[in-house]
Image (cartoon, rainbow, N blue to C red; front, top):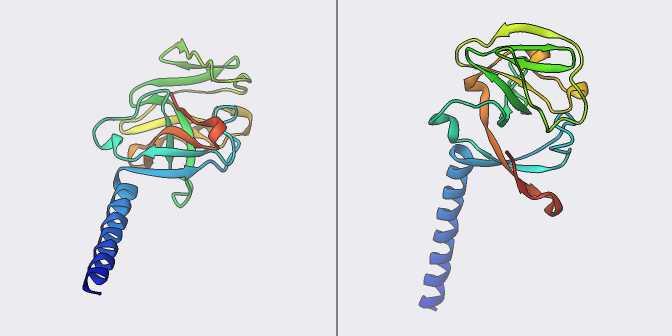
Length: 171
């Protein structure tokens, strides 16, 4: 009987330690998010589940092209997923169906439809980023809510892990 109690106690202790470690990882290192918007189609679809590296921006600044989870300045209680197009100090402009960063046309092979409308030119302020959805016709992004402060970035989306047929690393 004593061995059974000891085994149960050890099992419960292991469960508690595993739970605490899992919570630590979710809070500070990585977290799963579900895509709920159409703004990143065709690269991310509604109901895709992505793994987000929440730790990376403690060590470096965001880079253009990265897909990020962010809290939009207009409603920080929500999470959006967008692509970083320009970072601090870069000049961004949208004209003639293309995005230009520092005067150079941005190569956007991930888009299926051209970018419409015009925006800028504007220079991204220090410690902020300019983000756009990949589905530009159906995206609430920096064109609507402006620049995103670095501290509003939750992390970088690194992997689609669900559904199984869509598992792949995000670039």
